[in-house]
Length: 147
Length: 413
Image (cartoon, rainbow over all chains, first blue to last red; front, side, top):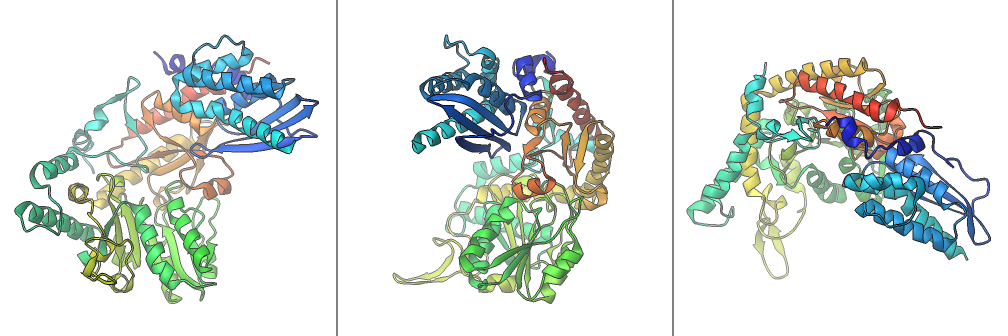
């Protein structure tokens, strides 16, 4: 099998598209909380900013420097969390973590995020995909602490 | 000229496959592969001579001690030390540098004293100095490097002054390959009454080294980066310095006379080798030095210089490759940092791995240097005496797959 075919499951079209043109990859005008994280081993960096309206996530932004997997994951994350409550975001976080670690179907419709399922077969890349979600969790904790 | 066919046949691992491709091992700055002569020496030690050193009256202990001390003498010869007692065995370069930081530096640095480094240093030749400087109120200063990562001697002349107590510098950068002008820096340091420590982790495996000709006061290197086993490091220290230095760790072996309330210490090098040393691996390190002696370090350097020239030429003419470090191969070792298009090294490294090509991707334990280059990470291909031009070709060719997977595909809007 060619290397392209072997790695196609990791670098799915959706992932490459998000990596090449990330969504919500600029600072928010009025962020309520922000958090930053890095993967010291490979040098991936992600910053997450969140703005809340009532109890919902009105918008989220994420950007940084890193590999295709970490940056695509961040981009897809900002799409997926828009409009969610803290509880719903927490549930999504859990579902994504489980998908990345086990590759198993959870029955939940994850939309574009489903493209990350293939990452589970490449254990060294799981932490890349998880990075933005870890930073999101930190930002949510920060939001909770502020209240 | 090195006989590549014969050399490669000595390294069993070079005939294995990775992801269905022949292994192309280009991560030698991290650790090198081992020839069967070294593997055999390790097995033979355990099968024939295993016993603790410096203790037993019995035959095996004597044999083990002889092998351990023979390796010390060989290391002294290999590095051009005046005497075997100037060679201390540690766990690795990192421990060798920490030993100097925790003994000599702790006792000799005061508030306002300066340690002069470069921004090219591996974390292991930076963080130990940060810690001891903080503790003693000393200050770290950094020699400028130019756009190709070469050390600016004018800047060194300005920085190294009356407050300088130590210059600590890698003889060869583990990222850019830059070869430091150690002799000139040693002269500058000594003119101010300062000492110089040379991090030789990357130079000892690849260049002929003579600590007396370099005129350095301390020299540190690691066995596993020069065909030897893991877990063995070397610290060379000038005899008169070691004589005055306080012990590093305390315990067995390093003592002379022990009372309940106080003790006196053994002379160097034993004073700095508390506890049971890694004697089996040290014995196998001797075989690694034999291997390098037989080839000759001049021949090793010549082979790597030719390979570096070839690799620089091939990579420079590949579209999308950004090279870092000195352009002139004479000024560098066989370690080449580069990036490919705007792709992250982690992606490219993985795509290369799936073609059997092992390179390193990341910050290479040199985060300040990454900031200087203004990149989060780089790819690094590092060569050794068994690498060939065909392997450079495989590396250059392997980049095309990264392009196919991530570079050319247009986003779907």
